[in-house]
Structure formats: C-alpha cells, structure tokens
Image 1 (tube, rainbow, N blue to C red):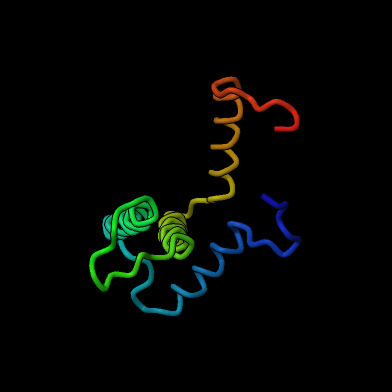
Image 2 (cartoon, rainbow, N blue to C red):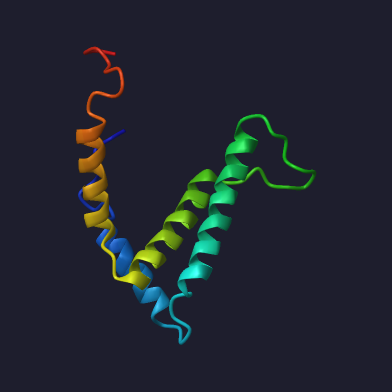
Length: 115
C-alpha cells in the first residue's frame, strides 16, 4: 500500500461530509436500531460480492457487485452511527490500533526483512 496522499480523507472529514448531507433533511439520522439493520444489510452486500469473487456464480442477470462501493456503503452507515451518537471514529480507531498493536504484537509470525 502506498502512503496516504496529503489530501487524503480523514475520519473527521468524512464525518463532516456525511453530517452536511444528512443535516439537510428534516428526518436527520435514522434511529439506532434502523442504523443497525442498515449496517447488517450492507455487511450482507459485502459478503455477496466476496462470495461472487470466490467461486459463487451470480444469479442470471445479477451483477457480481463492486467491493469498493459496498465497503464504502458500510463505512457510510458506520459514520452515520458514530455521528448520531457523537462518537469520534478517529479516536476510536486510534484506541483500537493501540489495543491490537500491544495485545497482538507477538501473536503472528513476522515477515523477514525483504519478504
């Protein structure tokens, strides 16, 4: 993977963009249980694309799907959940990475230099 470009989108940027979009509607964010249902539905779409990419033949006339778009749909719903609850995904992601980088630091076999 290449390093992020200087104009890379941050979680804060994405959160603000989603909030600007959702805030223009009277309905606002979906309630938490509906957001959870949407998150589950989007995860199912990701699973469908992965299955199609790994041997499952799509139904006649069914598009194999676009993993990049489906993952972005999942991210949109997660951002909506975080915004609706006032949660910082940047802070949460940093906390999660700290957890795995310390707890799981020696869990996996490290690659040798040059691999």
